[in-house]
Image (cartoon, rainbow, N blue to C red; front, side, top):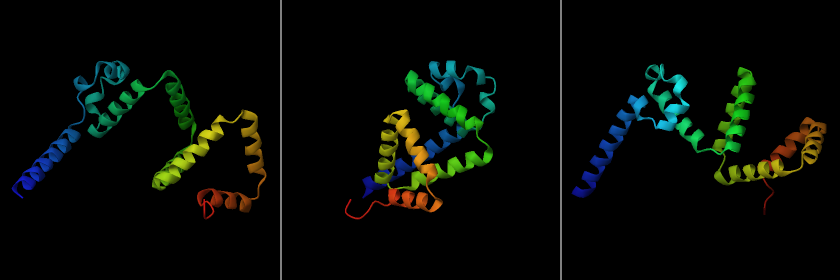
Length: 155
């Protein structure tokens, strides 16, 4: 019993210390050399950033550095698309992402699999599928969406 209490107190202290570290952000000198090179244009204003924003940027820089050249190119393409969106389009994209995150893991995995298979199709086949979808009535589209979300029993 006493050992459990000691462990609990230790965990509480670690959580508290992590919270304090989180509130302090990331000092420029605590970034890796590679992160500092990548974020060099932001060095002058780094200390003025919100601590949480510093952590987000530091994690983003680390992810960027871990990406392959191909992954970086894809990320840049997605960022350009994001920058070209209106505020309403961005809000809709965020809402769809949150909806996706609320799905059960098996359903998320299934959707990711469907998307990957779609991406592997030849461009002509993808265009054909998009065209067929556009030709559907709103009711048919909704039925298709519902059938995709809830597979028939026994599947």
